[in-house]
Length: 79
Image (tube, rainbow, N blue to C red; front, side):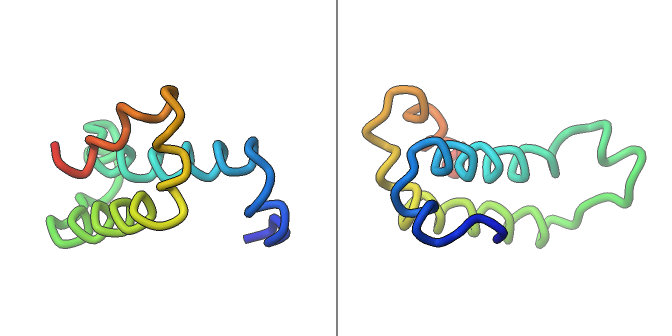
């Protein structure tokens, strides 16, 4: 990542940005427009993206679970 490690650990805005980027890439692979115009994602690729997102939520993303803005997104891996 191009953002310094110290900033990633301490800056709340940077943490929010990282969280939203993870959400974007998890949802991106399911959007119908992307599957029509680009190669279809295999089920294995979709599962891998979900696992990566769940691992992020369990590690660095766990801190944001206390914020009501992000609380609903913690259900995404289970839907």
